[in-house]
Length: 97
Image 1 (cartoon, rainbow, N blue to C red):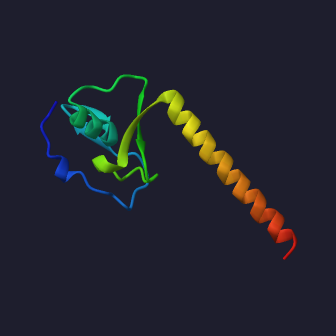
Image 2 (spheres, helix red, strand yellow):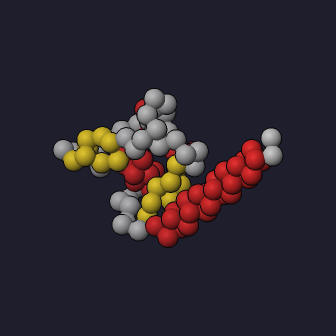
């Protein structure tokens, strides 16, 4: 792996999307590359790098965590369910206002 400073990794607040970069002629996701540098190994297929604060352009090490694909899917399904419940409560409240 190419040696880069993790201090150079910053938040791109204008982009809430997965950032890509070129490493040795290959296009890679920046969050996966950062985690591989931290771990000192390649990530396997089942390992997903999750952005804790939900900002996909925030690739600071403190904002990244590894989950299995199953854990990551369960986490986001739970988040969607909570959001749906909040929207339902707001809709019901609006009926009485």
